[in-house]
Amino acid sequence: MSKIISYLTFSGNCREAMTFYKDCLGGELTLQAIGDSPLAGAMPADMKDCILHSTLIRGGLTLMGSDMVADEGLAIGNAVSLMLDCDSEEEIVDCYTRLSEGGQKTHKLETSFWGALFGDLIDRYGNRWLLHFDKGKAQQ
Image (tube, rainbow, N blue to C red; front, side, top):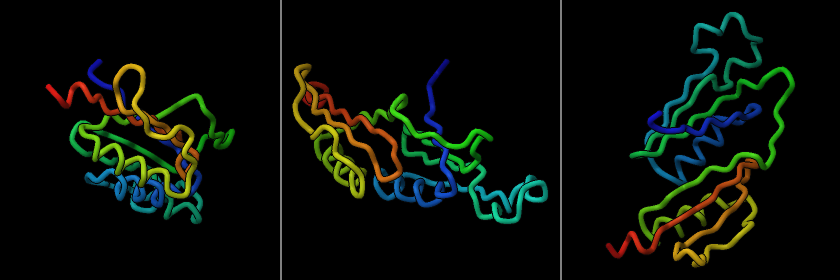
């Protein structure tokens, strides 16, 4: 196995959420709407603008998402977090500030006992983010 990619499921607001993440994190975003896919004819007309698949890529970061909710519906919980390992103090502060807009700062950025700058938040879409910057790595 070479890496794990986070895949988020939304309920009709994937385009909005992934655009928000692009604005916060940068990178290249691709979106495929259901109406522009081979599934278009098999899906209800009101789903044509929903996102079948999206990908946000920035360096080693890959974040994927979709509006394709399973039959049992979408249940956002606290079992999955997105860990963002930042390259600088400036980057972690910027990402924390941007991702927390409209969300909840659950643990402010602070130096941890292991020497990293760390914090977490729940964004406006209900997704939990852990942000980490290893201060020791920056001094090497």
